[in-house]
Image 1 (cartoon, rainbow, N blue to C red):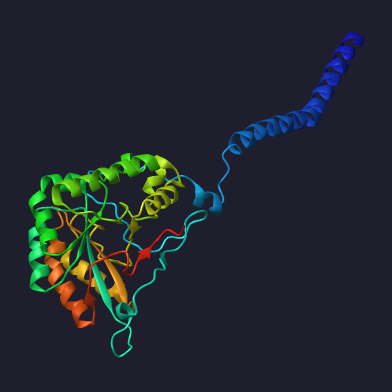
Image 2 (spheres, helix red, strand yellow):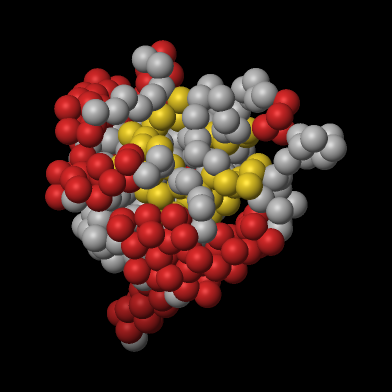
Length: 320
């Protein structure tokens, strides 16, 4: 009987000890396990912090696949860009403009339109020239070397009719021209030699592919490459031109004619001096179709048409 009582008391004592371990020790162990696990989770997820808006603003742009030059042009449609650092909102470059170009005989502000065509010549150039002649309008053509080699006859005809040529680089290859200042200068100089040898003209006007504040250049030469290129080309005697009226014909491979006409109407409103961006490429057939209406509208609004020069009105996105 005494042995049975001893065994029973041993079992009871064991139950009490187990109960104490269950009620006290297990929560402590569970708590330590949770904290250890949570610290691991925290350490894993705090290695990728969410960037601030200012950090996002200065982050290098995501890689953008190189587009086929013949299929899609990457000229900027909007004319305002606000970035930190070297970039700023578009500003009109201040140049001394003769009084008779700013005001008429009555002293009223003169309205002047500068039609510009990028990326030509093309199979559409002769039709553009015909329309300009029919309306007695002169324009400025920012041409590329690759296109000029293919359409040399229209290029020569453009000069013969009294229009102005500007440099838009020989290759128009963003990866090549925006790799460095030296690469851009070499490419632009190649076009200058071509125009001198094949057409017999010297041009000191230039338009940077994508505009002077384009961000595609960042991918190839860094965020400061456009500042450096702009300074170098200006130092070498070039005047660079952006635009303050986009026709939006680069917003799509083939932009509807009505969209082009309406864009010029809307973007020119309230401006006395306008530089209109259009494109002279094989695929830009609707630009040709819209051109007569664009000219007619601008004439109705009182604009006179002139070609760009170092003495003309200038609009530049990038402030040096």
